[in-house]
Image 1 (tube, rainbow, N blue to C red):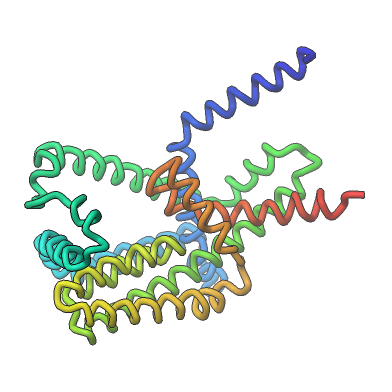
Image 2: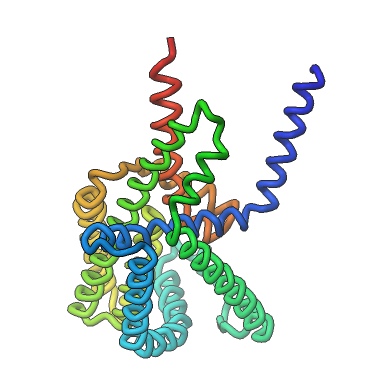
Length: 333
């Protein structure tokens, strides 16, 4: 190996290690980009329709989001706190119900023995360590979200400056290609965010109405979890269905079956009608690609990686189509 190749290999190794050490910084940065695109969609609509300055349009969007968020919190937060407290009291009862069902089935006797007797949440871990762990994790998460929001607002305030910086950092022969990739990525990511937001809102409302009609306890909390986890396709809706099904099991197995049917109907409606309809002009992600990206980033970065996996795949898919497919593979002779 000549010195030039050795230097290139060492540089690649150092850059890889640097990226790994800064993975959380890069995750926050990419989250800020996603949030900035989400802000830029309504900002662009206001600028186009009312011919106002970007700073004023961004201020209007941020104020509307803050006021709307505060109103929603004021309306829903007291009920959510009450239902969350009820959920913590129902979990031990749910475990006992599951144990009784397992005990009635001889084939599941070994599984029943793996559940500890006299289960108590206080015995899992000392309460003080639980509180410290939750408080530390919550504080770290809040700081990351605040930093992400600040970066997003700064990017949305002057996106062209950041765009020019990225293009300037690209070699001159590839700047036109980078400009096209940025345009396509912005359109795809904005369309994906808008479509998934509408889809998640529809899932939340339909689930809330369905659980309330079935008279399932904690309908609002369960519906909110189902709506939020819609942003994590494949894994999210399946995991979200476990909470209302478990609560319904405490009342009767028949009610649990009804909740299962309700969630299957809503999930299929969202997967095969709402999502394709809302995203037909923006991006088309294969379920296998979405699932593998969520599993990979979840293993590397935990829950934040799972949440940001699909936006990252949307951007990478655009880059693959614009660069690898069109400029390399299609021109291969």
